Image (cartoon, rainbow, N blue to C red):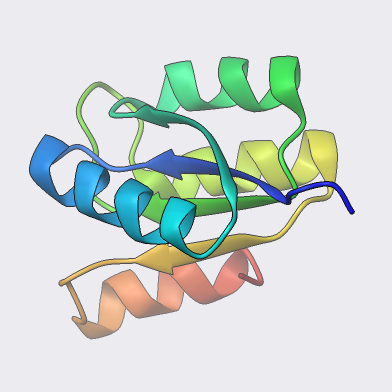
Length: 99
């Protein structure tokens, strides 16, 4: 059985590394850890992961919600948001992407 491929999009490198280590210990293949939305879209198109774990606040011009929208439009793959932000406006925007 092939390992499921996961792309991690997280701007805090320590958090990204911890998530990567845990996933690999559970037998998943982490394609890469990316900190910017534009790079995440490019990497997702190149590698076609089975799942994307997405932080909402990222480095660069594009936030995680916009990045998730673009990835889901182009690839139709699931995106799970990981975030410490739970304000109503952020949650409302995130729900639109149907994570």
